[in-house]
Length: 422
Ligand code: S3P
Image 1 (cartoon, rainbow, N blue to C red):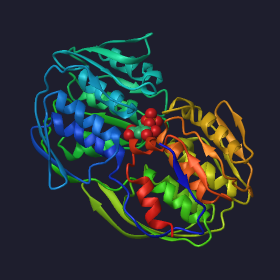
Image 2 (image 1 turned 135 degrees about the horizontal axis):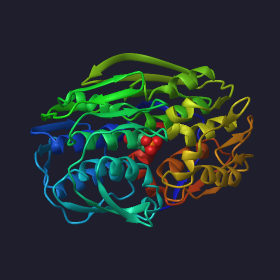
Image 3 (image 1 turned 30 degrees about the vertical axis):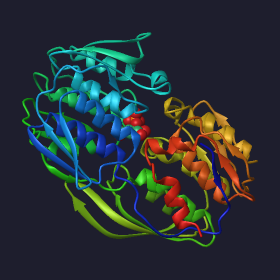
Image 4 (image 1 turned 60 degrees about the vertical axis):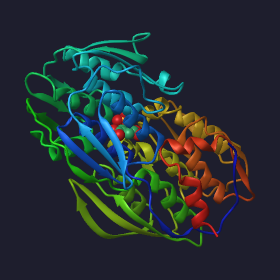
């Protein structure tokens, strides 16, 4: 569906982003294997998180909507019909950890984009734990997972991936012996927090996470913070457009996710954090953001992993900044929902913006202007939303083709955008 975006002088008002996608997946999976009832408030409205609920229901969890909350009655899982993870890498990678330890065989796959995403990264550690997994060409979905009795391992992550870390920890819940995951580069720790909340014995010390065997998980009531990665598009819009003043309400402020705020501040962004509070193990805050003069910056090393989902939005800000944006060590972007380096390059060029790419990154010089264009997000939600923000700063109306891709994480994105642009 094409969406027309007209230029705007600013964004103004209050935005409440959807519930955090990463946290929603984890609570849904853990709620479904915990004993008793889990009630989730502000569960992500994104299609990816509905895929997770669909899979958990197919595995026997009783899932209902009550007063806008997701209510899950968990317990033992049962052999499912083929599971559909849709577009969601988080669903297939994290859930495979649980499936590998069940007393049945399951099959899990997804859409065309998901079918191209690498699974070797989870097959390798799960196989070390004793799992039996078949994959298309040995590495792609769909996966056929023959449940086995697993044993704990001591595993050092070869790629900085919270999905892989979470997969191993979720498998570890069912394994004999303790499970240790070592992460050389820090990634989001929502799984560690969620497992602790639901009653697991888990500790994390300087990148070494130890899960002790034999956890009995108990259902809980949780409030899910707003998604900072979804809020990122509005943060960038407010910083970019000259007459902006936006309040972003109830957004997640977990330190393993909030590198975005530090990075934007280092470039001169005016963002005030107001009223931080805690919910479960997670932090929530409100952000006041105003139009700012942005200097530019470099994203590399551990910072790349910490900002991986925000890089499409930051590429747009970089082009309008004084000194531009350099992104390095970001080969992972090539295996996201689409090859995001190629998609950023193609669409920036369509807007008349110069960009140079490398196998693991790109450079966007600063002080550039956006020209109206037809954008092709290639089915990738974050590309669709990032270029919608670029279109707000363009010289005439632009068209976002396939704009429905945004619904993967943020179905209300375009209606929210209309609400904050005069
Ligand atoms: C996610 C981790 C990241 C991120 C994805 C969600 C998660 O992927 O890009 O959108 O919820 O754990 P990787 O862990 O593969 O880097």
